[in-house]
Length: 176
Image 1: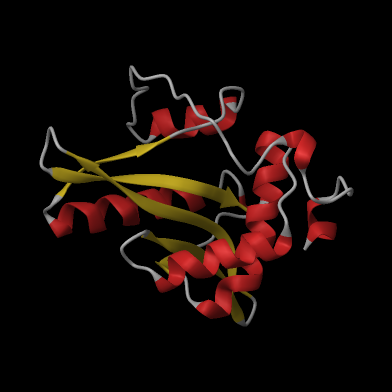
Image 2: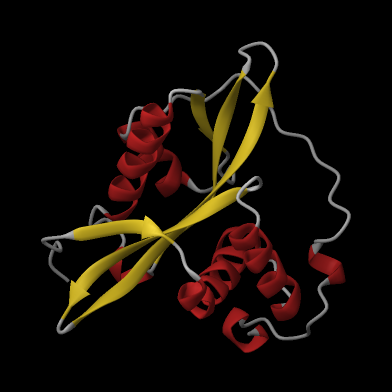
């Protein structure tokens, strides 16, 4: 696949829901071996679309023959920093469709996020986390100027565990 001439990044809309469902399910399976329950995922995507105080979703499109084709996604959520009296934007749920990887899709989304964050004036920075074995993503983030933070992430996940997945299939598209 050749490098697309134009990558268009825009806020996701309800018409993107099916693509976001598919991409999020594949992302969870690829990066963490987790299978997501379709209705829970659908409700989660719809919740952020309907609640701008939680964050927002973006999609990346390229012109493919006679239409725009969605080839990537990411989600922004917010973290208040009392030390800075300002907000960090957390980049999450990054996914680029496999045939479009290494074509500048994530770079376009990242640039869009930086431009929007800087234009707002009350955003103190962007953050993201990456699965520790995902070397390709880590390299991409370093190439964009991100630095590894000195923090280690801890969690207690009350809903998603590999052994308690509500589905039996190992194929994420079958979940959807």
